Length: 610
Ligand code: SF4
Ligand code: SF4
Image 1 (cartoon, rainbow, N blue to C red):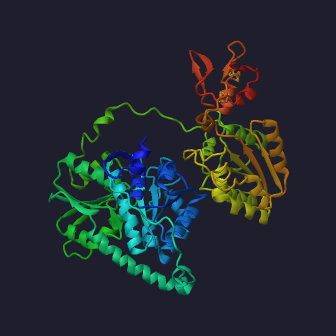
Image 2: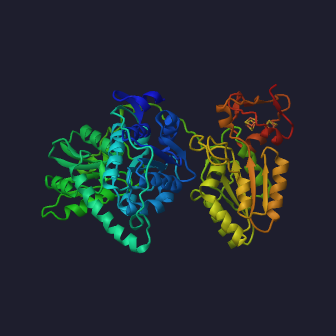
């Protein structure tokens, strides 16, 4: 783990940093004073790191209730002249986009940076969307680092450019850049305004149609200036002087392109783009003139390739452009050296390479780790209670969070999952279509993030949804960040049951899911209830409890009593169970002592260890 003290205070020198930590350092060097976020892999370390150094640096850090609110809070600071950053994963920008796109019209006064982390290959996400489209949609500048050093430098430059142009700016990373450790040379830490001033200017900040039309033209003018910056930017420059082929690349794909041409022994020049919106059209046009063949290497959508093709159209003698549109590079999944190596070789008409792997690829493959609820997860009990009480035929709409792993065997609870907070709305629609009760399963953090409007909608329209809030008192999936339902360090705790009642829900129950009798009773009542009901199943996350030093003694299996029926394994799927020398055992390190399997064993063979 990075030395937080050094990260927060050194004025020069080098540190080994993850891309996400480098973003923190870059923001400090630019004098950021307000940081907001909704955590989400691969972006979470940005806000988590800021949170740990908040006091030392005097930066206000907030885990906001969702990305839109995070962006709005940061925007409020920036329009008041205070430098601000908000961070989120790629899908978070969908939530925040409503505010972002109009913020581009009003502009800001202090630097404003939205950090968005894309996730090619969906390592921990529900889709593979390419957020480079957002820079084009909002018409604002975008930076794309390829490594930790650039993540630091570009964050700093992006905040300064934002303040100079009075425009919000996006820094887009991908998982590979966010989570790769690399040495970073530090710069001085800039002092900036902690307190802001909001200078009223309704024609600029109140986006009624007549003002918005004027501000749209202002935005277009600012982006002309941004294009001049992009043309002269040190982040958009040519590497190498090879004449055989031209390569245009950005982000993590640049690293693979460099390695691929090197391995193939191709004499290439590579135009690396770091300030990728607006593109430096003149620089690209100039580059294209020197080659018969140009490869565009980019992950996900062929955005750069389309732009390069359209820029090259102005040339009389156009080079052949190779990329996704010619089928040389794939349009889905994260790139690797192998993918780019094959793409470059195929574009050049070289024989498919026999050896395209990194040297470390001779290492044995990582053992498969099936996604499964953690041992002792209290919501194994919640899902078990729901399924055994409401039945297999019930439609279970689940949501974003670790409890979505309940969709795996043996529990298999979860029939549809779309996006944050969607379970309630989708359940309402299914319930309406079927004319019967439908279950919406949602986590505590997700409830606050995006479920409340759908709950109000269900109340107003009397949708028969049984909302089961799996409250584990933390945002476990993204690294145990707080949310409004836990004890705060400032402000007041917001209870989910109070919110539900305040929204007009007439059946609200709070219970401990380990009390299966009570859980079953409440589920039966909710199923008969005409209208929406909310059951808050509350028990702390077992992993978070261990992190805090709370341990319960593990359980053991009595060799004498156990008849090897395997009901415990087949019904609950707790990973603490394992077979050793033909004997079913409970791993005492993994077992959290939750005691749920005690209920399942028909012969009472599961016993306390002491
Ligand atoms: S008590 Fe049983 S269900 Fe709970 S963690 Fe241990 S083995 Fe798993
Ligand atoms: S349910 Fe009980 S009897 Fe059956 S395998 Fe598990 S511990 Fe043994």
